[in-house]
Image (cartoon, rainbow, N blue to C red; front, side):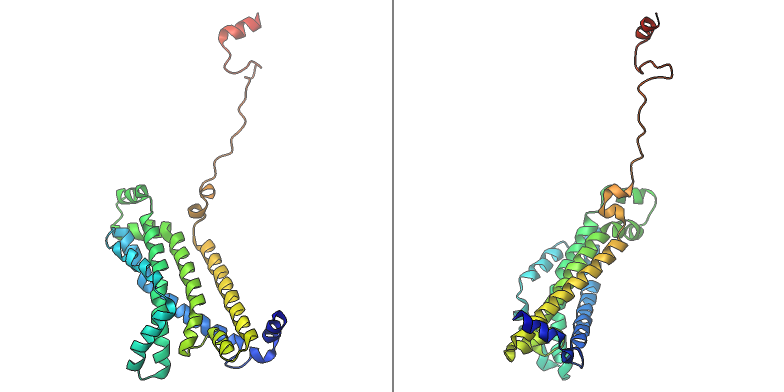
Length: 260
């Protein structure tokens, strides 16, 4: 089986054309980035607002409840309801998949943004207000930089979930690496199915590594490693004797007896 998968992956015919691996990867990445961009535009500002004002916390709980919805069942439900209402066949299949994946990507993005802003040290907020900063400036210059690690963590989680889950959208006829899994199962071409699964896993790992590099470059080291925020000054060895050779801290009477 392993040899068959390797043969399928190394076959030049599978690396060219509209059904080739590069084209499927581009389709998969484009759809995933579209979904994450839409979900981030909705969830991150909402999570920042909830964390900044302390109002609407029920929205975070409601969003987390969406995690329990079966992805495939929701995909079929939205496709059956929305598909007949759209005349364009391509959009009729693509739009339900995008809507479902956006719904599934919102919870980690919303939770990360809310938790990051809500966890900012109140002393930092008070100090900023004491300097005369407006609430919007406090949010922009204090809360958002401090919340950036958790916001990016939520973005990474949502992106990996979308990249992995977009494979099931192949049941609606959309492109992406999921076509290899679905077509392989339909034709009993199991090496193709296994190769598609490996490609999805490799793409998810690669995307995660890229986002980890972005997070490492965007976040201040002091927010992730407090020991690097401000290094303690090097302590010089403390002298135990004075210039005369007498132990520091010895009493005058003791020094006098030694002198005599």
